[in-house]
Length: 377
Image (tube, rainbow, N blue to C red; front, side):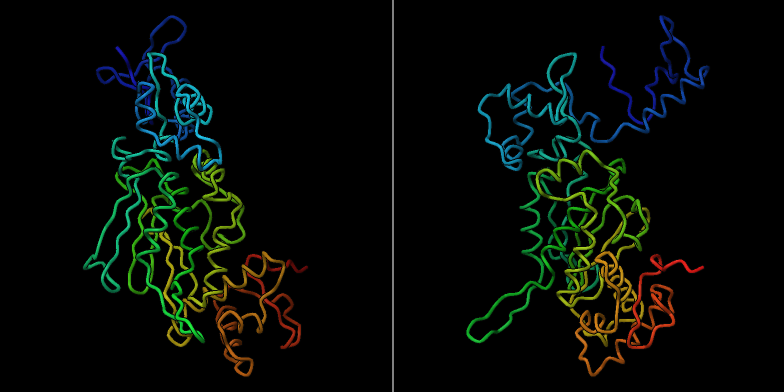
């Protein structure tokens, strides 16, 4: 008889939970200290360490996991010896030896390098969904694609597929027509990687999703962010899935430096797009990239967010927001500096930015994000 390892709560026998103390079997409810200790262990066991598939034969492990992609993404030669391949996968925590024989494929190995995620039962729900809609609503979908491969082995294909659906513009130069993507590729890549890495993997029956509309792209993952969305730019890196993030960093998918959101904001400014938006929706995190719009068509909330994020980006680069930098951000001509002044005033009135020195002259005014305001005594 085999009893699977406990997951989230102790294993019960006929409705009762037991624990062994020395050579005696005790009812767990009679030992509250032991029960608390068990719950602490459950709370600290990462999702990646749990077993996705148990007692798998050597050759079947190599059939379920894309070990070729594992070596290629790490820049290593693909080993020909099956035993050495299994040793390498075990050393990285992707599989573990089972005392009853064979191998246990960990969630980490399955979710990153599965050849077919649906072969791992509930993990199939963690595959990325990409949906393209007609117009600006979810009323009519043009196409929907659900990912098949693991996050690491399928990442480049996923990004290529998304970029192939995103709209682009044709720019006519002096001699040639050039197709320019509407959304910065680096921003899309960073947001997709963040959705995969920072999702709440314990959330059941839900997975990350990319939705493409005519005027925006929405990227959603389960779980609320670990830091306030207003502090994405300056916060140090934090992840609820440290093991997953570590492997993704090693293969070059993410950096674990906390600079992903900075890049998204910066690329949005370079492409003269409205500021990206991050929001919490029913326990999930949703990030939006918006298509190009004129300054006159952007509403007040979007203008304030754009100025605030511009101030954050300047601050982490050891610079301040100025009238000149706002003009550059929005493509405003110098003779229209009054427009930039109005944008700054809106953000100040909303409490999103503050003057570095309130007593400075009008032309010398510099601004900081509200959380970076200098202490005055």
